[in-house]
Length: 104
Image 1 (spheres, helix red, strand yellow):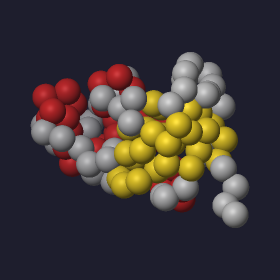
Image 2 (spheres, helix red, strand yellow):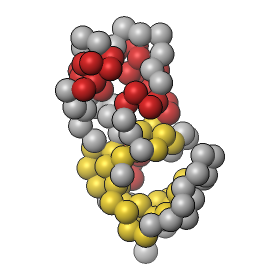
Image 3 (cartoon, one colour):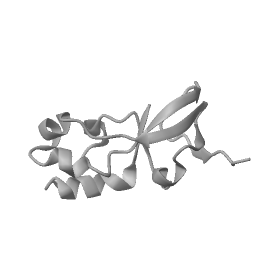
């Protein structure tokens, strides 16, 4: 599972020399807002009925050059989102809240 922060979309667009970037172009599974994913490395979150554990940064792939144009790969570096392990599967829908699970 891959996640990206909505707040990074305008940054990626700017770095790629575009006015905007549609989230689906970036090939991430979930777009979330209002939460710093980088601060949650190794932590678990609930999204809808699923529980995820954020594992590693999601590196951009060469497809970003085709999707965003020349420089698309570099525009994504550091803004590509996060990979997550599915701890408990469940239904996830648009508008579902992201809840950070408290550490013990």
